[in-house]
Image (cartoon, rainbow, N blue to C red):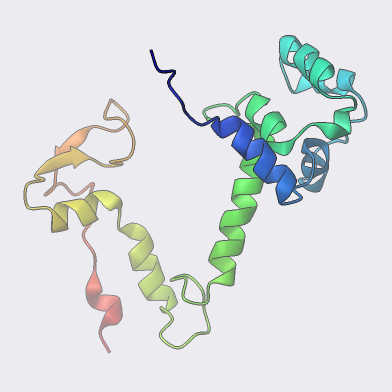
Length: 173
């Protein structure tokens, strides 16, 4: 019988972090403005005690903890899927991508930039409206389509006033 083969994505991510010279977990936390971690006992407020015990066995010093390992082991933020360190890193990456892209639709001062009135109108349009206007088979959906339908997010008709239409008057000369 042949043995199944596969890839160990966690091992790849740890090694890739080392190859690319990523900062350790403790350095990344400090860069995000979180309190410094000086020893394994400081981790007890961040990780479950069993995780701290495992990290103590795997790493000689708390500063040796790989960013991927520490980030994945953090307790998720309330209502989230990731902990505070990865949330900080992802937020920083998004801000840099947004502010560093001169064609980002909210950036001002470029040829073809939207006016404040146009931006206000664009911010009032939702994904639900885009879906209603562009997919003929969609006649009803929830106001926030990427969230589950429920009491706070009921399924409504595409003709409903709670799914605002794009008002193009801001584009008229």
